Length: 252
Image (cartoon, rainbow, N blue to C red; front, side, top):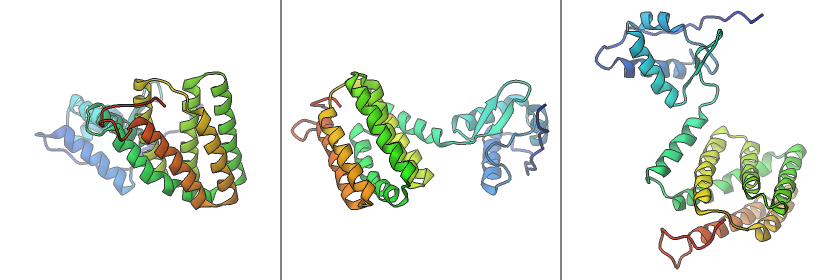
C-alpha cells in the first residue's frame, strides 16, 4: 500500500500566451520562493495543471523541460510518477560550472584560484564544528586513498582526495559551501582527466598527515596554512609561472 498523496495548495493563474512557457516557469519559481511548493512536493497531473494555467499540454511540457534543466523539478515515471519539486538542486550549479568551463567562459586556473579563496573558510569552519566521528571519517579517507595509491588505482585515489575536501565542506555545515566546492571539484576532475594521470603521493599524503595533526588539535590557522600550501603546490604544477597560461608542466 502506498501512502495517500496530498494535493499541494498553490496560487497558479492563467498565463500570457506570447511567452507562456516562460510565464509558467516563473510562476513555479514564485511558488517555491513563497514556500507553497517545497522539495519533494508533487504538482498536479499534467492535464489538470494545463487546464489551471490555461495552456496546452505541449506548452506546459516546454516549461517543465526548462525547469528540469535548471534543476528545480524532476520527472518520475510509473504509477506514482509525475512532476516533483527537486529535493536537491545543487546539481544545477555543478552542471552550470561544467558548462561554463566547456564553453571557455572560465579557465582551470580561475577555478583553482577560487578554491584557494574558499578552502580557508571551509577549513576554519570545519575545524570549529568537527566531532570525533568527523575526524575518524577524514582519517579513514586518507587510509583508503593511500591503499588506492599503493594499488596504482589513480582514479580511485583522485576520487578519494577530492572526497576529502567534500567531507570538510559537509563538516563546515553550510550547504552553499558544499555545492560550490563540489562544482569546482567536478570541473577540475574534467581538467585532470584531460591532462592525464601523475604521481603526487610523495607530497600529498605527508601533507594530509600534517593537516590532520593540526585539525585534531583544533588549530584552524595551522590547518589552513597546511591546506593552502598543498593547493598552491597543485596550482604551481598546473600553471608554472615560466610557461604561458595555456601550458601544463606536470600532471596531477
